[in-house]
Length: 176
Image (cartoon, rainbow, N blue to C red; front, side, top):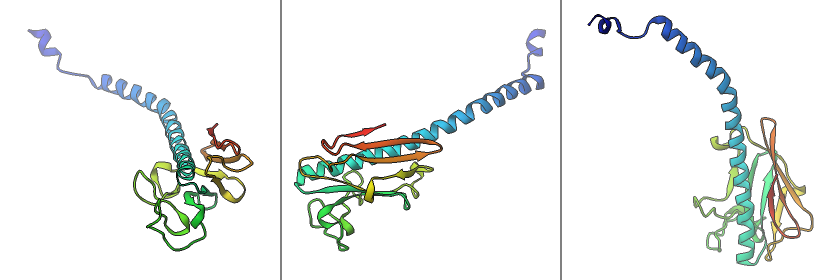
């Protein structure tokens, strides 16, 4: 009966040892967690741009007219657009697919205009468009190919980067 009464809980020393172990683990894990979050944001932004390229390519094949993706390094955004209306400031919501000003087409997932601003989205925090092809755009033709030259888009975040290459002859999209 005496043994049961003496076991009343943890001592202050026990708690301090546990807190010290947790503190050491936190110091070791925190930088790795930050690195993983940065890499996840870069990967997500890269996937979003690849999806935009694939969407523009599929629209070109389906509707048998040129579509493209334009990226802006200074503004840190990209958009999918219809070349037929790329310089038109009036919306053509009755067109197939629906087109907003300057030919921006609708995103089939969220039904908003397909323009992605990396600066205003918490999902892509810290990710920037580092490099784009000459003119900032790649266009896809009705047979699926893009232009005669390969197009490179580079996204970067915290010293890491992802390069998206669009093969001009085949239209194949590759991430390195």
